[in-house]
Each structure stands twice: as structure tokens, then as C-alpha cells.
Amino acid sequence: MLSEQVYAHLRDAILRGDHAPGAPLKPQDLAKAQGVSLAVVREALVRVVGEGLADRLPNRGFAVPAFSDRRWQQIAEARRTVEPVMLRMSIERGDVDWEARVRAAHHRLARTPVYVPEEGEYYSGAWSEAHRVFHRTLLEGCGNPVLLETFDRMWTASELARRWSTHRNPGRDGVLEHRRLEEAALARDADTAAEVLARHLTRTADVLTDRAPSNP
Image (cartoon, rainbow, N blue to C red; front, side, top):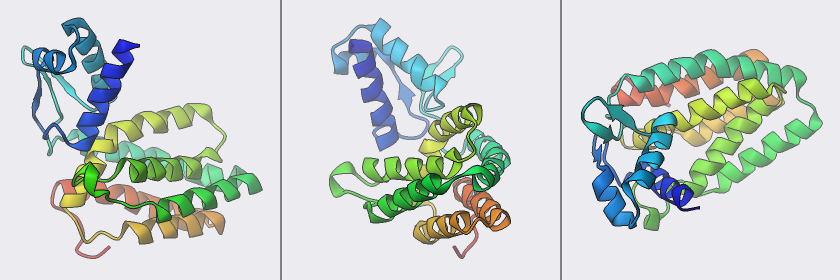
């Protein structure tokens, strides 16, 4: 379907960093570049706005969210509130199959290159997907589809901030953070796991406002 293709192309372009933070997303230019109608492009823009990957500005059209937008702090606050609770539930309810999925998801994440030269300077698409799967798998043990849908929405909305943050804190040891998360979850140590996850979620928001701790 044409509208789905245009939406997917626009979404990927924003996530790759093809459009700079705060850059306008002009329907006419996008339509011309894709060889489609304005109606198709506007439908795609409305969808990426709904995911938090673009803003709809009164009387000014559409734009990529600004780099320092307070929204990133708000999303991080929401995630710090919800996800540690979900992780506690997963540790309490998750079975052996959940443990196996967590281990497999972490193994894939640890073995996936963070950067791929041909994809530019941001996190690679493969790593970003492995990252999402690892975090979602950690929380799937909670068994609550409503909470998992909430996670999915927040994750997509925060994806831009996560990718951009790599350039504000290049010394961040994400590998160590993820390993600690896996170890605490599989040790069924809910207190430690929740604390590690909350710190992990805080760091992306912190680096966007130059408040990241000096040590990982």
C-alpha cells in the first residue's frame, strides 16, 4: 500500500537522522521527493506525529522534535515510573521460558554492532531493534498486555532521544548497563533490577540536557 510505504520511509528517515532536530518536514517537498500526492504525505506525517517522532506546529506545519524539547524529560519520567514496576512483575511472574528469552535477547543485543558505517553516525537499525527486543522481553514476563502496549508507545516516542544521545555522552557503557539488567532479572533480584533499570532510563534523558554523570 502506497501510504504505508511513504509512512515507513518517512519514519526510517527521521530515525536515521536524515532530518535534523527541529527541522521542518514540508509536505510539498516530501511529496515531490517520493512522487506521491500531498494527501498521502500528510497521512504519513500525522502517523509519525502520533508516534512522537514529529511535531505538528500551529500555523507552521510539521517538524522533527527539537533536540532539547522537554518532552524527552517527560517521556523519561513516565518510563521510570512504569517500567521498573513492570520489571518487578516480570521477575515475580516470569517462568523459565521467560528467562530463556531474556538471555537470548541479551545475547543478540551484545553481539549486534552498535554502528554500521553505511548507516551513518547514529545507532544502527539492527542494534536499535535488538535493543528494543531486549527491553521488551525483560518486561513481557509481567503478562499484562495493556502495560506492554504502553511500553511500546513510550519506546517509539523516545527512540529519537536514545539515538541522538550517543553523541552527547560517548563514554557511556551501555554494554555494562544491559548486562547488569540481565543479571539482576535472572537472579530474581527485583530491588536491584528495578534500581538498575531506573538509572538506565535516566541516563538518556540526562545526556540530552548535559546533566549526565561523569562515570557510567
